[in-house]
Every structure is written in C-alpha cells, then in structure tokens.
Image (tube, rainbow over all chains, first blue to last red; front, side, top):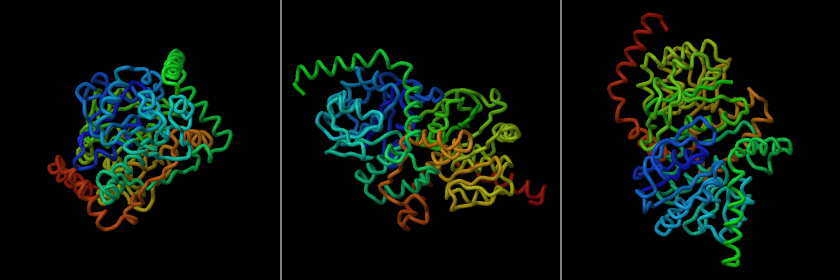
Length: 235
Length: 235
C-alpha cells in the first residue's frame, strides 16, 4: 500500500519518524515523504534535515496519508496547495491520519468538521476553533477512516494501532518487538494531568520559545479565514 | 553543550530522531548530525533521507556523542575513520551514548571492553563478541560516562534520562510533557520476554529481510579483526 507522510518546513521530526519507523516495516508498505517540492526541509529543532522525495502532484492517491505536527502548523494551515491536496486525497484514502498539531492542519482542510479528534495538549484550542471536537484525554481517536493521535511521541502508538488494523495483530506485535517498543520513561510527566504545575509552566515556556519566531503574522489570517467560514456556513 | 549524533548510511531513523527530539529541547543544546561527509544519507527503511550537517573532522570535541544503530552497523564497525573519531572524542566527552546496535559500534571502537552494556535484542551476540558484557533485560545501562540503550525506541527513554542527569529532573519532565511522552502501546510485545513464539519468529524474519542485503561480505572481516585482537591482547 502507498503511504504518504507530509513534510513541511518546521515539521516536528519525531511526529513523522515515529509512525514511519513502524509503518515502513510492513512488508508491503511503499512509504514516501511528500511536500510541495522535493528536497531537504529543516525540522523544528533547527538541526535536522529530512528529505521530501515526492511532490504532492506526484502523489494523487495514497492509500494512507499521515500529517505530522510542527511549530509551523499555522503557516501550513493557510497553505492552499497543501489543503487542496489533503481534501483531494482524503476522498480516496483508506486511512487519513495525523499526529500532534497535524490534526489542526486536517481540520483547516475541513476534514475534521464536527468530528472528535485529538492533538497536542497545547493545540486543543486551535483544534476547537477549526471546528473539531477535542478529546484531550485520549491518545488515539478514530472515527471511520480518520484517526488522530496526541502529541509528538503518540505517533509511535498510532503507527502500531494502524498496522494492527491494516495487517493484523501478529504483524503489529512483531514490529513492536523489532523496534523494542517496551517504553520505560524515567519520569511520569507525559500528560498534563500527571505533570506538576512548575513542570507544566516550564513546558509551556519551552513550546513558546520554539514557536514564537514565525507565527505572529500568520495567526490573524487563520482567524479571518475561520470567521469568514463561520459567516458563510453558520458553523 | 555540543551534542553530536552520528549518522551513516543505513542508520535506523528512530534511533537517532528519538533522542534528538528530546535532547534538542534543552535550552543550551547545540545539536549537530555528523558523518564522514556532509549531505543526505538514506536510512534503513529505504524511504527517509536524513541530513549530515557537519563532518567528523569539524567536530573534534563534542560534549555528548550519540551513536545510533542500523541495519548496516557491521559496515560501520569496520569504518576506520568512524572508529578513530569515536576513540578520539570519547577521551573528552562528558557523555558517550548509544542506542540499539550503536553499542556494537562503540564496542568495535574498543570503548566498551569489559563493560556492561545493552543493545537491540538481536545484537546481544555481536556485542558479546566485541568484548562487552550484554545486559539483555535492562533498557538503559550506565557505567561512568558511558550509557547504552536497548533497541530503537529506547532512545527516547535514554534522551530523557540524559536530560535528567545533565539539566535536572524538572527540565526532563517539562520536555517529556512537550513531546507528550505518555506511551500507550496498543500491544505489549516490545520485549522478547513478552512476545509470543510466533511473534518472535516473525520479528526475526522482518529483521533478517531488512539486513540481508549488504551484510554478507562484511561479517567475516569483523570476525577476522576480532580474532586478531584476541591473539594480540589475550582478551
């Protein structure tokens, strides 16, 4: 099956690579990294380049499309080429999936309207603004062929879940064993409900520093688009 | 602090990207991806390109060096330039770390001689052959400034552990929250002790298919090197 993972400048690397590491181990997986043009893209940590090997135009009908998040999702949320491609491929996909704030991009394309979905805890507000119904306590949310995962590392869980659905539990477990996914986090602060108040503040600050550099000008445009949409459709 | 993550053709992407996603979120982290030459490298899944931004020669004294695994570790294990660089930088690192079969590369450089260490479950034999003492039931093994992690996804746990040591628990927990590392694997087959016999067989088969294509000619050379070493040093 053809699996298209969207990349854009500022993608969070683990959002894309976690599910890739799982999905690419399915024996019939034909995975490609797609974007508006081929070539290297800088991920949001500022040090890692990932390669786009196929353009969106070269990839008109993937069986599975996966949208990762990133610090630049507001920019991608108003990229007409990306949104049109997502709407178009979603018509024929078997699965349409997102990790982290990738859900907000799917929502901006109109794919999550009125649907329950999850995303990174810091992106629940934008997800609601774009017309989806946030499920902040769920790591994976599925409705029909749409499946959204929580922040960053949740893409690994999503990848295994998808393999289970696509190819059955035995293969999913075998892949889990090949990547030795037997997580033993040395701390237990991975969900907002588990982290202390100082840790939550520090995490928010880390995110703000990472996202501040280029979002300021884009957000008003998203609000405009959303309000115009509301006036035109009444929802 | 300067953090150098080694890349080579056939690196397993998540081995490198898991710890990167964690370590790069430390406010004073200066992370670089290093290799024998700059440019794109194809990872072992055959679809994802990662970028080497700095050569080994340009990176003579990183504070932290991290060696990921891959299907081509036997090739890297006999790469004299890589081994010489590892031996050299290890003299002045604060931390020398590996994920997955990256430990076997560290061992080939002579850095793990007589030391307890962990690696991917399928690489415990090679690790022992190279003179280290495998600890197959531990996810992270530390002795002085050397720290090795188990297969592929264990690099995320390692990254958090390292941040805890380097910058303290509060920052490590804040980073865990930013990447929402609250793992909820849909299956529980991530360690050989937990997977059924058919799942273990299937996983072995998946790994063999992934590694078969270019290892055949390299392994005898490693055995030669190891035996010559044994004859010369008596251990």
